Image (cartoon, rainbow, N blue to C red):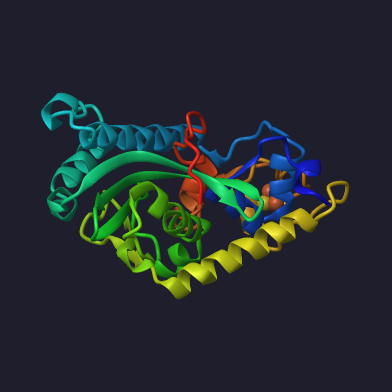
Amino acid sequence: MAIEMMLPEGFTFSQANLQDYIDCPRRFQLRYVQGQQWPAMVTEPQSEYETFKRRGAQFHRLVERHQLGLPAAEIAPGPDDLLLSAWWDAYLGFEKLHMLPGARFPELHLSAELFGARAMAVLDLVVVEPGARVTIFDWKTHWHVLRRDWLASRMQTVLYLYLAVAAGPGMWGDWLEPEMISMIYWFPAEPDSPVTFTCSRQQHQEHGARLERLLQEIRGRAAERVWPLTAEVRRCEHCQFRSRCGRGTVAGAFDEFEGGEDLWDAVGGVLDFEDVGEVGF
Ligand code: SF4
């Protein structure tokens, strides 16, 4: 079945919806193929979830403004949110970032064709040193460092590195080789424990093959059939469709997310799908 027949016109693949498909094809089908909105809480209590979202978004905005050149003293968070203030102080002390030479592109939107579909990524910060390297930073406002193997398997790592390699030469110049690109997950709650991924030509090919297989699989599914429900029933506890799928009616506890690792995906990050510039490759 052609992808245009089952996904809304102009549908754009992102790390979030690709990860949704990997975690549960049925969730992808309900959310993106059928466009269903299911009114249910993601966690209990809802207030902690809302606070988590708000604080994460505030931190992203603060860093974006600072990287755009606003003085730190003018944008520092107020004293009413001690955790946000601590994250901000940790960010100001992140010397590796502040000493890194190169042009800065905060909240950079990459959009490109991906094996016959459209894909996009929102990179929290990209630092480009022409002729030398491209460093992608991603702020993870979880309460602890996420496991390296878990991060390596995430579609965020795969898609972002793939798009940076594929679209990078068109954006930053022909000098760019896969080996010059790295991605750093940085955790304001544990600022001394960043997780870094580098790239290589072979890895880029492997990422591409994985993405192509995934898109083929999604395209091959029949829209009128029920797509497979995840066998990992624990995922349903924090999924808005759990009553729709007959997998419970009560939201899972906020602090019972699997170490918080799924939380940012559930939140959907702070993606802004508007104003996405097209980058050809
Ligand atoms: S409730 Fe479970 S099976 Fe249903 S869409 Fe969500 S994760 Fe998938």
